[in-house]
Length: 157
Image 1: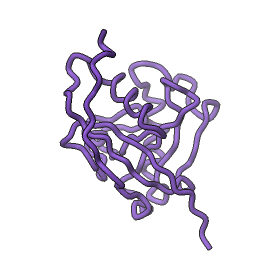
Image 2: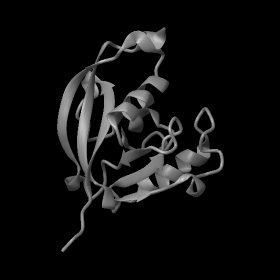
Image 3: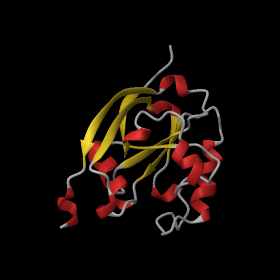
Image 4: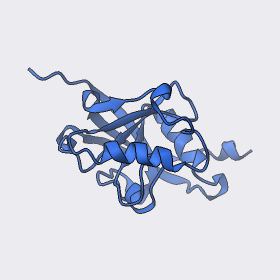
């Protein structure tokens, strides 16, 4: 019998990217943990962290009012989890250093892994789950729900 650890992870995105299972944005533009050309779906362990991660990467005055929160169900046992001591020493540096891109891309290119789990820079005790859309384990990743999300502009005040 195979052990699974199902959990839900969350992603706040522009409506046109709701329910993404291809990692289009990260493939086109790269991210902290991947080079351009490597698809990745950046998700968070909670809705609140997903909102923070979205906000920190957006100019607040330009955030569209209407967004979507996508809920994914994953098998966390198929993700490699890393803690701060496992990561490159400059992993929090802005802009994202090449070392983190190399680190994440190496694992995201492994088709056997569903993805990796890394601490959030914003709340290091919380984790982001980076889903590998090209993984042989993608059958274990399910979009559970996509819901409208209106960004609360009080953060701008």
